[in-house]
Image (cartoon, rainbow, N blue to C red; front, side, top):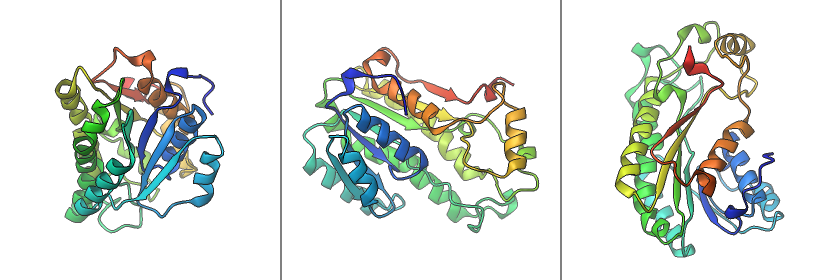
Amino acid sequence: MIHAKYNDLFGKTALITGGQGFLGKALCEEYASQGVNLVILDKAAEDLDFTLKLRNKGVEIEFYQVDFESNESRKKAIENVSKYLQTLDILINNAAYVASAQDVGWAVSFENQSLESWNKALEVNLTTPFQLVQGFVGLLRLSSSPTIINVGSIYGSQGPNWGLYSGTEMGNPAGYAASKGGLIQLTRWLATTLSPEIRVNCVSPGGIYRNQHQDFVDRYIRNTPLNRMASEAEIVSSILFLSSSAAKYITGQDILVDGGWGVW
């Protein structure tokens, strides 16, 4: 839970993609606690207990199941949301294709990474934000202080340290890095294109602790000045800040929330 209170967010509406994932749920809970109404887009079916928990905070919740790999599914979501909303204040492009170690052609050696997994990463991590911004830009312009926040990654601007993954089933696919790098540059492009009405920024998390292989965790923290991995709340707080009036003179930035990882 974030302790800072941004009173200027109360009563606004935020659309969050991937709202039922690890970071997505943390974002939804925090924005609901700030009095922000939510539109949640996720590939999974609605978690009714979770949406009820959010509604109990006194905010409006609208959920749409979306296949982010499908152009038609994304278009349908844009149409449905546009019918539901009168205006949109905050758009958070959080959904990401990360797959798992068991998926063929993903967390494997470069020679074995598949074109299919590469294309899925680009479709979800880069094409989806482009299409959603394009589809919702009209609603955003109806807001008095619209903002877009993309969720990138340290691997969108830095190469992987392969020693971290030795002896684990974890990996660092080229498609993930390339799509996140593209999202960071799309952030800059949108910031200059949609200014001065709409601010556009990116938050690029470092490693978030989620019970990863202990060898990976130990190696990761040894390579991080703050000597630990991040929590979900520490990523959420940066996104929350960028969506508030406290950041009203910040646009076109990629904020690395990485415990100093990129310094070394």
